[in-house]
Length: 206
Image 1 (tube, rainbow, N blue to C red):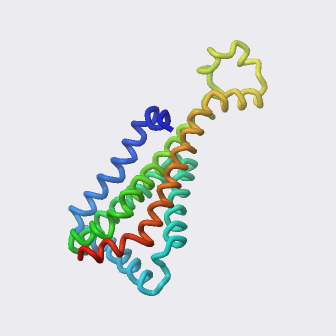
Image 2 (cartoon, helix red, strand yellow):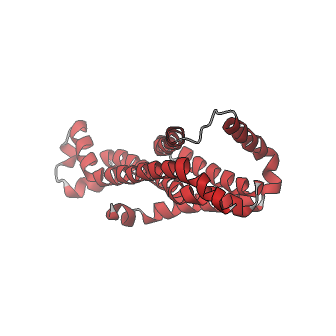
C-alpha cells in the first residue's frame, strides 16, 4: 500500500488539487454560480425532507460508493468522468458551505468529512491510475519499449504480447485496486460516522 502512495504521489496530488481548488472556487464565487447550483441544493434538501435520501448507513454508503465506482470506472473514458466528478463535488461542497453559518457547516460536515473527502480523492486517484494502466498496457503491446526485456518480443503471438504487457504493467493495476480498496473502507467509516455520530455531535455544540 505504501508503494502505491509513493509511486503515484503526483497523481494523488493532482486529484487533491482538482477537488480542493474547485471547492474554494465554489465558496468564493458562490454569488456568481448560485443560479446554477441553487436548484441542486434545494433538490437535495427536499429529497432529505421527503425521505428520498435517508440519513442511514446503507443509504449513505450506497450513494457514496456509487460515486466512487463511477470515478474508478471513469478511467475508460480517458479519466474525464473521474476529473469531472472530482471537480463538481468540490464546487458543490464549497458552494453548500455558503448556504448556512460556517460553524454549522463545519460541525455537520467535518465528523464524517475527514473520512469521506479522502475517500473521494482516493477513488479519483485510483481511477486515474487505472487509466494510466490501460494506456501503458495497450501501448506496450505494440511498442518496442519492453522489447529490451524480451529478446524475442517481435516473434511473439499477439496473445503472448498481451500476457507479457499485462505482466509488465501489473503493478499499476494492483496499485489502482489497492487505493480504491482503501477508498472503499473510508467510505464505510464515513457512512457509519455520518449516520450515527455527525448529527449528535453537531447538535451538542449548536
